Image 1 (cartoon, rainbow, N blue to C red):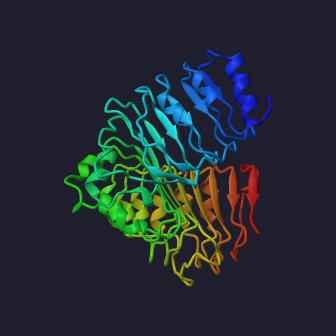
Image 2: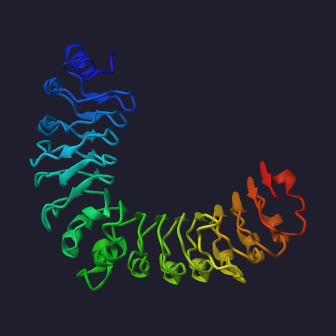
Image 3: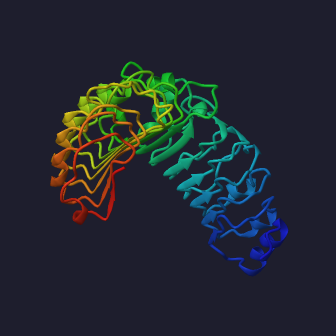
Length: 377
């Protein structure tokens, strides 16, 4: 099948007129997507992710009555998105992410929409009007750029009622994510924080200011991922309020000080990852206890990964209380003083220990026979 637009489109239409699933992701196809595909009325799934079309969004896709999945992520489609409504009431997944030259208002859906997942991050979409998406009764996953988020908090609330997985990113410097997040999540802006109880997973990327109010209100979160953000100070101690968290990741962020002792309240944590870049992390050198002793309270922790944070000071003995740990990585932290805790020998489930690129002293006893991966430099 040729990668030229007419050839691959016409070949499918001619040979497979009743095809229901068209999945050709990352096949080096080029565009435009030809109108001949409009004859494939039986299509329920269209997945063309990762090809290179560089033309306008094929408007005829919006007329397919049986369509349930449309994935055109990272396909370089561009121009204005059509101002019309998707006809399919069965559409569950729409992914247009990663098309930086695609602009216009957010897609329209009927009142009977069964949409469950919409990913439009990495585009130039904007909301048409406040409250225009309050009919998303079944939406569980939403991924978008902060520049698309309306300033009016009530219009945001309409989207968030049923959302369980939310990803917000900041593309460029036009808008500061911090104030908008405060509008969405603060008690003063919303009639009731209870309306956000469905939110389980929150991913924030590229934001300029992390506000403590996030950690006060989103107590139902089980997964929190903060990447390439700026705390403008220490990691807020209010993070200890998120007691339902099972995974906490803070990667590539700038913050001052050490890990707050309140992290010991997160007794449901299975995964804790905090990393940055040694030369950029901004962590204060000379912290007496960069890793708090309260970390020993995390009895369900299976992975502890603290890397490239520029910390100085000892590793607390309480690490040895984490009996379920299989991965312990505290590397590239420039720990300038302290000994390797003898209590590490109690971690009998370890399969990966990495204490490399620190200035630690002491002995590691009886560990070599317990682990598959063992690095101490």
